[in-house]
Amino acid sequence: MIITCPNCNKQFKIDKSLIPDEGRDLQCGSCNHIWFYNIQEKNNETLELKHEIISEDVETKAENKEDKIEEKQQPNEIIKTEINNKKKEKNLDEQKNTITLNKTKNKGNKFFSYLIVFIISFVALVILLDTLKTPLINVFPGLEIILFNLFETLQDIKLFIIDLI
Image 1 (cartoon, rainbow, N blue to C red):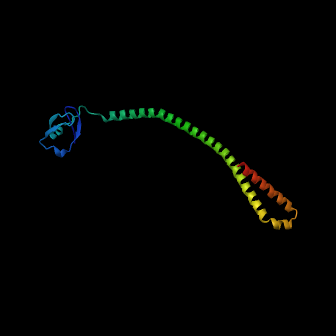
Image 2: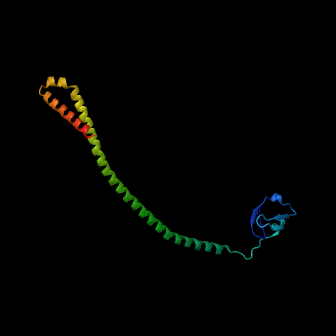
C-alpha cells in the first residue's frame, strides 16, 4: 500500500499489515512530519460521477481521433517509404561499386594465380627433363645441346636472383 505524507507529498510503500484497524501515528522519513493515519479514512471516500457520458459521443470522438491519426500517419509513411527507397538506391550503388572493385581485384588475383601456376608447371617440367635426361638423349641425340643450354640458362637466372637478394 502507498501512503503519502500530507506535509511534503512524499510517497512511501508500506506493508498493510503494519497498520492496525484503529490506525496509528506515522512519521515521514523525508521531512520528519508526524500524522495519524487510519486505513478506513481512505476506504470511506466514494467516487461519484458528476455527469453521464453518452457512449455515442465517445465513439464518434474516438473515430474522429482515429481519422486524424491516420491522416498524420500517411505523410509519415510517405516520408518513411521515400527514405527507405533512398537507402535501397544507396545500397544498390554501393553494391555496384563493390562488384566493380571485386572484378578488378579478381582480374589481378587471376593474373597472379596464372603466373604462379605457370612457374610451378615450368619447374616441374625442368625437374622431369633433368630426371629423364639420359633416356631422352639416347632417343634424340640433338637434344643434348638444347638441354645443356637450358640448364645453364636456369643456373644463370638462379645466380642473378641470388645476387638481387
